Amino acid sequence: MSSAESSSGACWFCGRGEGREHSVALPFWSNVSDDVQVLVLPRCDRCHAFHDRQKYPSGLIVVAFAAVPMLLLAPWPIPESLRGVLMVVAMASGFVGGIVFTANREARQAHAHGTRPLPDYVQHPPYLALAADTRTWRQTRTPGIGDGSGSRRETVADYRRYFTGIANDPVALAALERGCIAAGVSFDRQ
Image 1: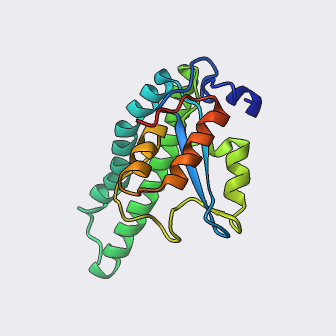
Image 2: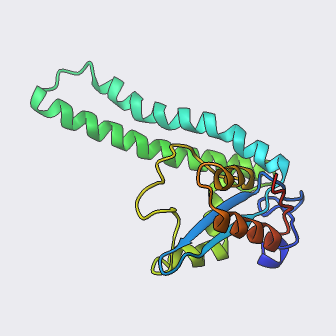
Image 3: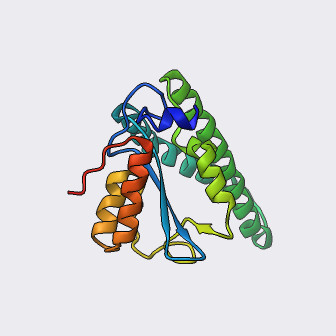
């Protein structure tokens, strides 16, 4: 889907519905100034509901794939000196297998529902450009892994609450509003 289609407010994931408050928001903070840029991918309510339904089963599948090889390995008479290493290898290989299986499962189901899986946002050309420019942009508010809030944010609504509440960041809130306008998604300041 071209960026021209996404600026119309049409859902980037299915191309049919209209992007709303559950559109995906991807903030980037500048490494060279106080600037913030928020890329908004319009997402309709139908695609949001589909993506939301995928989270729980996908998480369970990954955990099961990681646990089952360890459970199968546990009863075998393995010397203690090797048991720990083999358990870690079994868990890691199961975890990787679970991620691959889950990604394929989500892609198949998304295709069957006429949409894209949520992780496909990394294929959006403006996202690729911003994410590749690590000299200028980062995806965390502060350098490092996270901001310490412990909550996961994904949507315009999530980031609106975060920027007006915990973060109290009017610059980021204005960037979110600009991102919504550029994507054709309505922005309610509430």
